[in-house]
Amino acid sequence: MSDSRLYKLINVFRRISAEKAIVYRCFELIPEGGFVVQSADWIRLPVNSDAMRQHEQQLWELFCEEAPEQRSGPSASIEEAIAAFDAEFGN
Image (cartoon, rainbow, N blue to C red):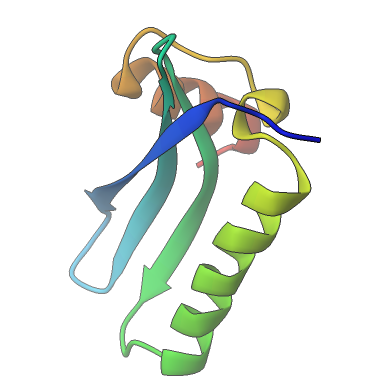
């Protein structure tokens, strides 16, 4: 099946503390607009290179398995999409 929709990957970072951060894996829907958060990766110091590779692999597995907007409905802004994701997953 061919899908003509395009997506723009946007990584948004939230610094939690001196030892922790979150990377929100967001997509902008093109051409219709709107934003969705596909996943959030927790990063902890010291950075584990195996965990970082796993985060990247999961990003692409999730993207290929299901369209990002099917995981959660699009929001008008990236901030709204992150807030909805946090509310759903308790971040």
